[in-house]
Length: 470
Image 1: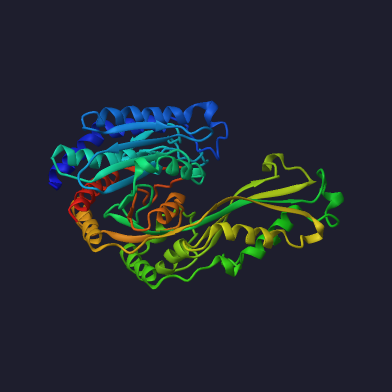
Image 2: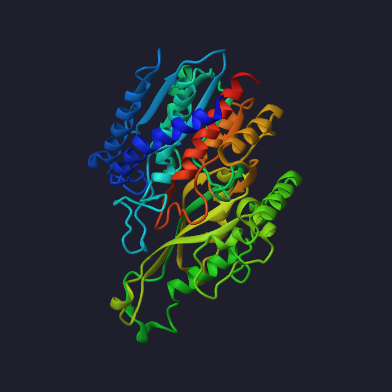
């Protein structure tokens, strides 16, 4: 591959077409089904799919034999499937998603989830980085190769609309489209993170997730707190004590031994290398309030905490009024949304029931305690890299950044990866992305680092070229 020519092609395509398309995409509030149960009636998801499909059809029209279809199984979110012929007998599967997280509060002045803003090389708004850029990045890479006559294997681009809800629709589509997808020897997922914006980052593991709602009921209706306190236990106090069964509130350590896994020595070594490259940026990338710091001083331990150790986050609360409306009432219930991140090799389907048993057993004072497991997705531990791929990602990173690639585990989940790892055990995997420091996927002020998006596209082009001649 002529790296200079490919870079020029991708930069121009992004500047002239991709960035304007993503700008319009950010305006669409196509929240994932878990956050918009009426997504089908609202039509936002179809609007996003139609926009992406229209652009992609225009770009692949000149590619002999290329085809695009929007596939809609009854009762499921749609997928975009793009087939691009290539040389040889192999198939490369390139994956991304189009659905978005909800708005979230706390956006800075002048920024909002559905109003795009291009500033200082960043495109602000919900969904550009997570993960709207993926289809454009994949096609940019393929089109750059086609423009210079560089051969690649057959490519299948699969864009789903359910990832932020746990990809529960995707297995049905993978089975339905099995003949068209084939048996990929390389899987490229563009829905992950990066430690910095200075080199290509390869994700080597993903944590799993067991999430659900914990609810504690103590009364059938609220009563005067002066009358009842000291007689009726607070539902919040009971909920707090139940969480202490699962988590040490002083250290954050999870107490349930079954939620741990042995960390492979190779992953520990990778964490040490990544910590050496990132230093304090491991934690300085987070927007701490003044005076706040990380839970540990050692960057390696922090990386292992967020990639290979279980942890609990309370991501939502119900049952309490706002402060301005909080009267002297002992409330009838408190509910909390729990997100329990699991090590990559822990079975999430087994973890959920164990957490449920722990939280529901012997409720204090006989309170009504229910933990509904709403999400269960196992993590993923990457297979060993083939020699050709290890060399290729360094070549790709040098082409895009002038530095070798780096490896790091990610604390989030991509349910699709575990499923594909089981379905295609002989495939090699490249899991990478643009979600770096302060990009804040799922939170306020999400942005797409445009330079990183272009560079990742160039890196993918190099890997596709190397894959064919390996």
